[in-house]
Image (cartoon, rainbow, N blue to C red; front, top):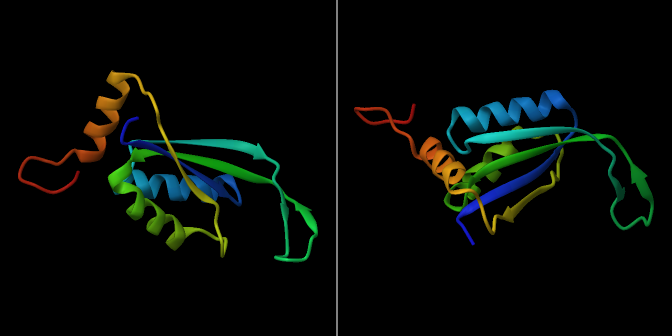
Length: 117
């Protein structure tokens, strides 16, 4: 197992996913995000009603490191339009070494003279 995580987040629309993704990238809390459209979730809502609801969402996949998870979650919650957003961290068992080195290097990059880029 590696220290890499993929954080799975559902968003109301592509605009929200882009806004959150760009924010996480600018803060170097991740090195890459993928936005997948046309998710069609089915879920129990309202709570404890037994009703099955459906909607349309967008999936945001955030590629990060374990040590950044709490910050990633905090930033997503701050920006997300849902009261109870789906934020799930999935461990990465294996990853291509060159990709992992790039990801880790981007997240941990600091400018000469200190400070994150």
